[in-house]
Image 1 (tube, rainbow, N blue to C red):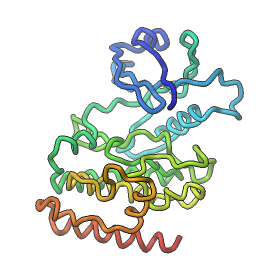
Image 2: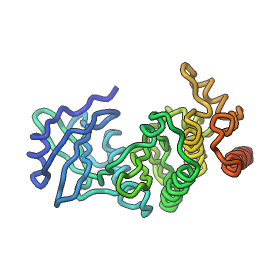
Image 3: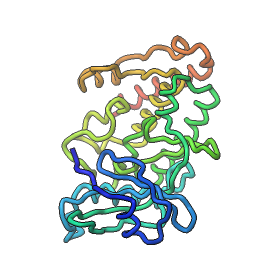
Image 4: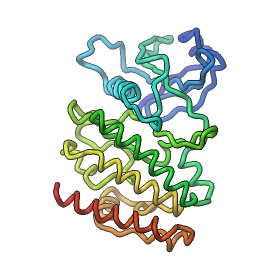
Length: 281
């Protein structure tokens, strides 16, 4: 498990004098996140711990490569439904004995789709459709710049409180189809939201936007029913792969009678097209 930076709001203020109203948000994965205001706008400040000073740009540790990919993706993606880069790009710093890399992104004030699902009320049909269309827009814009997100899931989608719009977060695992992939030799992302081809991590070149669409479909099913279509507590990776690649999930209307038949047919059509696409690979 990656070590996390040990920082206080005072440390952040010393590093970024323009930042005010600094508040700790969370730590997890490889990052510690703070909220702050810069030029009277709210931003998220993401810090990661380096194994040591960065001496050569050609030999970056993976944590820097991921942060760099995330910054590049936020900067280049034009969709309004992909979180945007803030005023601070990739920056190196030292706090005490800690070597750090950090950057800023817009702070999305709202609730994650994961938290909304956990409240126990399935999304209304119109909200499921809105979620699907808006995140599909982000997927399309990512593909236009040659990237696959690889980690679309309810926890990485925010519903903005002010607008009600959905925003895709956390492009640190984004796969550049014309560049080198990160995390070679083992799967990255969140397995319950993998497409079948994501399990073939030794051949990542087969990934394209359809992998993200599959993950979005899984997310929409969960939002509409409150139930994951494949994953169950205790599933091994092999069991999960078998379900995702072969099983037919329970019809959404059997889990939530409020799901319209027209919306259920979208799920069936997506499943059919997905199987046809995979047969061509």
